[in-house]
Structure formats: C-alpha cells, structure tokens
Length: 408
Ligand SMILES: Nc1ncnc2c1ncn2[C@@H]1O[C@H](COP(=O)(O)OP(=O)(O)OP(=O)(O)O)[C@@H](O)[C@H]1O
Ligand SMILES: [Mg+2]
Image (cartoon, rainbow, N blue to C red; front, top):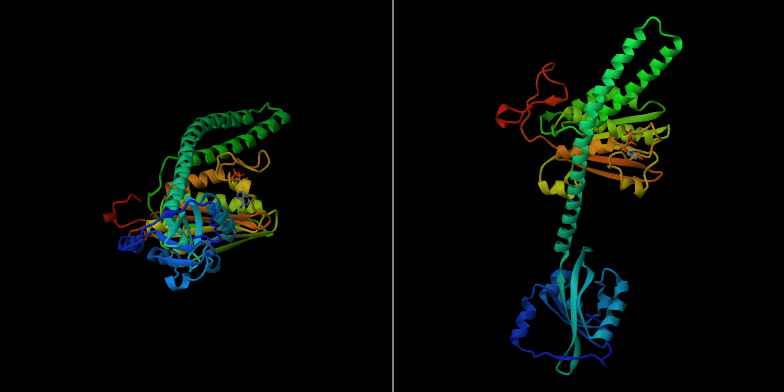
C-alpha cells in the first residue's frame, strides 16, 4: 500500500503464485492489498480490504492510495512511502484508516516489496485492532476510576470517623457556651465573645455534617425514590439557595421512573450541585435543574452497556465555567478554588461518593466564561412501584411491592 517506491536498493522477495496463495488472499480476515511500486496503483485487494474500507475491489483497483483517500490522516502518506523506500519493509506500524462511512479504524500495517513475475509490488497486510484498542482504553479508564474510588472510600471513612468525634467535642463546647451565657455576672464583652464562639461552633457543626455525609457508610439501594416528589419537596429550599437577581429554572419531566436509593443523599447531590452553580454565577445568571428519563444516546458508555434505565439530574449554569485544570481535580476531597472559609472542597467529593454508592454516573461539561453542566445519572428502580399514602413515608420515597425483597 504505497506509492512511488524506488526500485533500487530494496531487498525484493520472490513470491510463488498459485491457487493456495489465492485462497489465503481471499480467506484472510485481515485487509490485504497489492500496489504497484512505481505509482502506488492498487492491483488487487481482498475481501478483508472491502470490509475494512467499505470499498469494493472495483473501486480501489486502478486507483492509488492517495486517490481513494482511506488514510485518516493524509499527512501520513509521505513518511509511509519514505519509510518503505528506505527499509523495503514495514512491521506493525500503527495507522488509522477511514471507512467509507466516515468511521475511523485503528490498525497495524505490515508491508513488503515483493517481486511478482516481472513486476515489483508492495504487498500490505493491515490488521484492524480498533476493538482491542478500545477495550484497552476502557480498561485503563475503569482501573483509574477504581483506584480513585478506593482512595475516596478510604478518605471517606477516615473523614467520617474524625467528624464523628469532632462533632462530640463541638456539642460539649456548645453546651458550655450556653451555660456561660446564662451566667448573670458575665460582662457585655464576655457575652459578645461567647456569641462569636457560638457562631464558630455553628460553622464547625456544619462542617462535620458535610464530613459525615462524605464518609457515610454505603446506604444506597434503600428504596424507590420519586424524583418529581423529591424536587417538589426541595423547591422552597432551592429558591432560597439561588436568590434574585439570579434565576432558578426547574424542569421536571412527567411520568419519571423512580430512582433506587436514599432520598436524603440524592437531595444532597442536587443541593451541592445547585450551590456550586449559584456560586459560579457572580450575581446574576441562570441555574437550570432538569430531571428527565435518560435517553440511551446521552448515557455514558458503561451505563449504556448495563442496559438498564437511568434518570438524569442535570444542573447547568451560565456562570464562570472551569478551566481544564480545575475540571481535572473537581472531585478531589478538599479541592476548592473558593476563598478560605468559603468552601470546604467536600461538596463534589460527597456528590461523587453518593453517586457511586447509587451505582450511578456523573459527567461534566464546562468552558471558561460559558458556564458548566453537571449530569448525574441514577439507575431507575426496577420494580413496579406502589406509592405509599401520604404521611406514612417521606414524600420523596415510594416503596416497592414486598416480593421484590428490597428494604425501603
Ligand atoms: N458549577 C460550577 N462552576 C464553576 N466551578 C465549579 C462549579 N462546581 C464546582 N466548581 C469548582 O469545583 C470546586 C470544588 O467544588 P466543591 O463543591 O467540591 O467544593 P466547594 O464548592 O469549593 O466547597 P463547598 O462545596 O464545601 O462549598 C469549586 O471550588 C469550584 O472551583
Ligand atoms: Mg460546593
């Protein structure tokens, strides 16, 4: 598969012709082609070539490699020819080809200059390794995610443990402050100091709540949660989180499937994402929360592979957006770009932990200056659902019929 290969200085092999060779040529699942050395014109292609490129033999034969344009990157043609001229042979050169449909294939090209009768030809064999390369990339991605998950898990347990003990200390301090404030002889100055301590205790308690949520033991799969009811229950709170002049836009689809999980944790996911979106707005702007049944095309590959239905919670803002270096570290615990005292950097680490415990997926799109979009996909509850009469259960949660054997 080359063109304009000089005949001088090339070690030429002698290939016997015959029926056996013809049969091998036809049978090979690899793409095989013969090109004239002088001008690179295709002399013969096999069925594997047609499968690989979508070009019938009649469409390739009589035309050169440059003409049929199957190289994904045209600029690779010259170095390829030069190398074949220099070395007379190629082995397992990674090369990307374009199928007639536009799909790009990755493969390994081996070629030799051969003498067939009186003619010098380039014999090339191309092995398509697209699927193998894809599987390897997916495996590497999964391994990376697993490592990250294990790290977060260990950190979560550690943080949860510390938070628990720390919270006990905060409670003791709060009780002591309360006692001291009741002291009739306390000076106004002391009272003021005590209020400062109280405020700080409030902040410390809020921080421990975040930490405990982050480190919470797996609790997902605890029931069927109605996403519409969950958002309805959160509505007033969300409106307070996103005050005017910012606009909050809720788009909750009708007839949504229930989600399998813990409503309190799912609320926390939504809240954290909406808070981040608000912080990104710099005052005015729009935060959109959309809940919909996920279409297959929008699912991450792994989710699609599972074949199960998902509900998508999307939080989008038209705020500051994020540069790639921030996007790369988003889910790390304690990663924050906010001023000291403003952010703990645990919001998205918590979100990540919860989504993972729910066997869900999260994806992020963002561009500096153009806002960010967070998509959270949570698996739908598979059982047929029976809503529980109001008052018996939190409004966000529905229970499965008993034969499903899932604890509500
Ligand atoms: N919607 C968003 N737009 C722009 N940047 C974002 C957005 N969401 C998250 N970020 C970036 O990711 C960082 C980490 O977010 P995360 O929620 O984990 O922590 P935080 O918001 O800084 O702190 P906390 O959640 O405790 O208030 C943020 O500091 C911010 O830089
Ligand atoms: Mg946050």
